[in-house]
Amino acid sequence: MTATATAPHTATGWLTEVRAAPTTFAQWWVLTVRLIVPSVKTGEIITAIAAPVTFTASFYIPLNRVMSFAGLGFSSYAQFMAPIVILQACAFTAVSAAFRAATDAVSGLDRRFDAMPMHPLVPAAARMSANVFRLAIGLVAAVISTHVIGFRFAAGTGHTLGFLALGMVIGITFCLGADAIGTYTRSPEATSQMLVLPPLILGMLSTGLAPARQFPHWVQGFVRNQPVSQYAEGLRALGGDPSGRAHAVTWSLMTPVLLWLVGTIALACYFIYRQNLKRS
Image 1: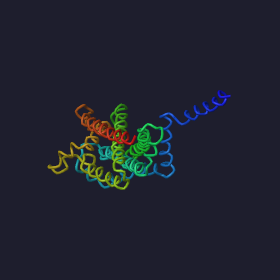
Image 2 (image 1 turned 90 degrees about the vertical axis):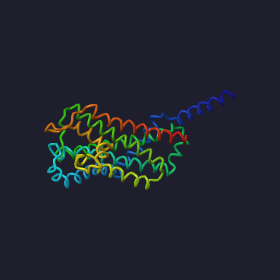
Image 3 (image 1 turned 90 degrees about the horizontal axis):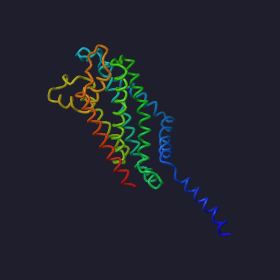
Image 4 (image 1 turned 30 degrees about the vertical axis):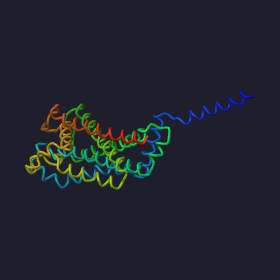
């Protein structure tokens, strides 16, 4: 009788343990869908598409004639300014990423996840997956909108793929840093305000909209060497120019780009890892 009574209990307990311990992949997938589906239903995707279109129009319409007259060394202003549209699309996605991370932190959702049988980095990985989804849509919209005003890939298939890959890596880097900031600040309002000014200031004081020589002499060193300018120059070289005036893709040109990316990714991953493990 004892063996007969114990067997069903043991089987039930085994089934309960199996159901209560989903795989890390399944947990990541469920949390990723939790973030992507609402963004589609609420129209957030439309905003991700509209933002690059707005950036393109706001940069190109007022500056095209002025900058073309001043001389850029490129076949058209559209060819010159396309990288800054890509970078602004990445920055826009990063602001959304920071807001989402801060919202999860302040709402107590991260603490609820901590109480579950879940790896502490799964929520952050799910947020990044959703960010990559929105980033891909934003980059496609940026490429299409710049194509409409005259931008063309002119350096071959390999360089075109490199342009798209670099744009995606830059966007992921921005999102990683933004996620770390949002998790630490735990304030959606403060986070959004904190991340609005840096892209604006660095974008204006960069070679994304004008060559460094058109800035005052005392600020040219900063304009030329800050990360947004380095990213813009790397994208511009990979995009090429129909007239053949773009810089060649060389190690000396791309090394600062890679160093900025590696350094930012390493720093962001360190803080995300530290913050998530501190709660576990």
